[in-house]
Length: 202
Image (tube, rainbow, N blue to C red; front, side, top):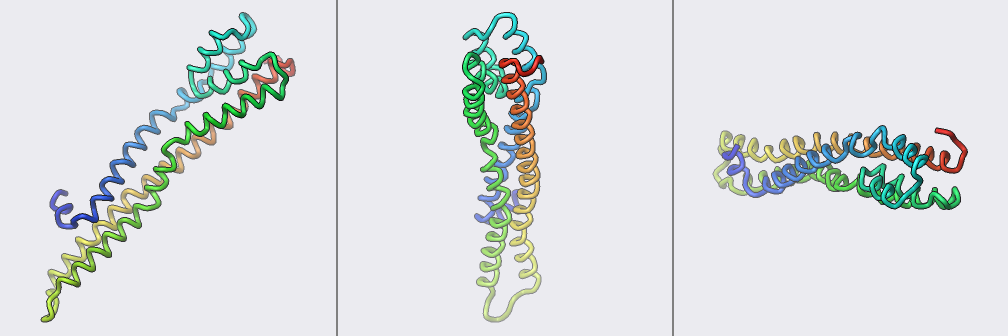
């Protein structure tokens, strides 16, 4: 592998950097976007039970807000539990936009890496081909040397695709995951509003 890197030269370094960043982002997002961490299944039931028994105290609201991203959304509604339905919904929506921004963190970078990696690979191949043909003498090209040079130049294109394919897969997976989390949070927040305003029992 090190011999390939030496043979290809400097055009491979941006690809190696992109691959390291992509792996780091995939690992970080995989750990951060776990359903149990983002949208805990039993949180709303606990919040409603606590609300019925003790009311929306500042301590309870702060505890819910620190629990998870869903907790932040529910806490925004609990802070306005004595306000009208519209005010409560607006506060939840405002907080929801901030939570969505946090959930989508680094996804733009991962999508950019997925998009530009094949282009970086193609750029490296073109640079390599230019160097190969520029180094050929006027007396003609050595076919064996030319074939070896072309194969080395194509390494960057292959590496670019190797980076882009999994990056695209994970980017689309994380986007779909965030969308499902947002829908789940919206449904639970609506349920909280309806229960608080007596439109729903549980």
